[in-house]
Length: 233
Image 1 (tube, rainbow, N blue to C red):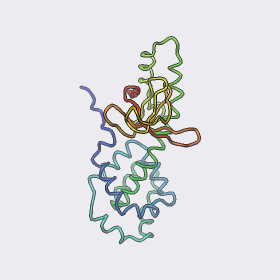
Image 2: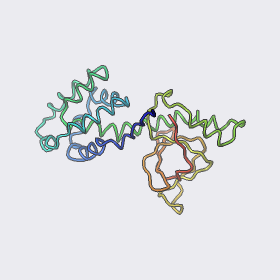
Image 3: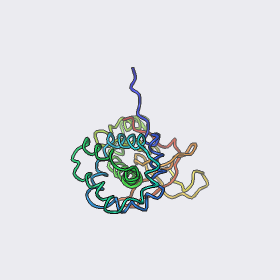
Image 4: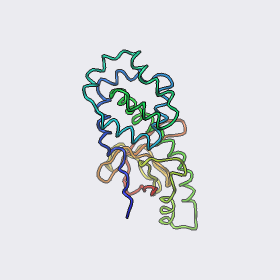
């Protein structure tokens, strides 16, 4: 019996609900939530894939639209008190117990911040960590390029404590990164074989990727999907 693969995080029903909820008036309260150790603890806990999935599912199952309409009834002090307990949740179980008791609008803000701020940063850091290992395989002159690509696909991301499903590596030399998904579009950069990138979008035969330079600058653009490959793990 084959094991059923887990769906990408963006396929979760809760993902879209978080996006819709957090794009509303809750963002006006984001700075109130994003203060102190509780916010840092929440981002740290959500970095665990299992915790993140459970939190998404919990938000989806308990989503209450009326909570967003009534969010202005909460003062800054009340908001701070409700998330203060997160700071002292020292394991996954205790974090989830506190998270599930939070009002929907606070859950949405925390998930939104993680998905749109922390997760992309973690993916880019992971890509930079992986790139030297992948490129080392392409320097093996004893293998054909096809064999090198297959070897790179077999790299275990779990050994690097990476659980992202949005990482790919470049399989060609001087692959052009374009501003738009058309061959006549402006060339932003040329990617080298073995470079690991993060997928942030798709359109027909193109994928939108991003990667981070050593100075922290992030570049985004489109490449042909056929010049990339997935990791199997």
